[in-house]
Length: 305
Image (tube, rainbow, N blue to C red; front, top):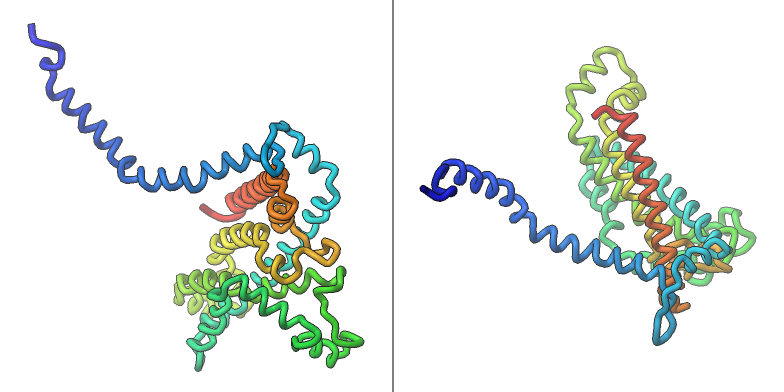
């Protein structure tokens, strides 16, 4: 009597080929998956685990949800959340509007367009630390030009540094971030504009559509998918972006520019409370994930798939 494996050689060969076809893509993906796990998921799990512990100079202890209960009664964190919304919304709105306007301008042919395009894209190549130092110098009332311009325009009684005013200080990093982030929207929206067929605009013009109608009925629908993803990504980047604020104001004066991102840094490396900083970071993570899910849901409902 022949063994079982010898009875149906065709079947066993088919199973081996099927298994090989199933496993082969995962073998090609395995280096990327390993890197993804090591770089993303392992630090994420470690960071979340830190939020359940309290760290001192030489030891740590498990405190369960103690760090999260502390957040509920932390007025500095509440102010940081409000500042984060202001910082993110103000930066994002102006970055998007200016980026869209520049993309529409650069999508047309005119003399010197390549030079203008290079100048517009230049801030994206500047390190954020250097950008923060430059804008802090620009707002300096002694050697910076902006306070003197405001004084000459009658907007200030004398040249003053708005970064030292708790009611105006946030506008300094916001203006710097607008300058720093406009190229991102300009680049992405300009690329999307280039993909719109020109004959659609010609047909609409022949049908008597005005410039505004062509913009609303053609340009906006074609740009909508790009706008949705870029707005979502840029919101996340701005909310977690602490470089400009920390360089320009350090979160001051009196915490008026302290965002959640800067609060995490101060808690971890100045107060040396890594557990509480991790808990605040987890809170920020869940808020941004919730925001992304809401935006993705709105995109699926409003935009054709």
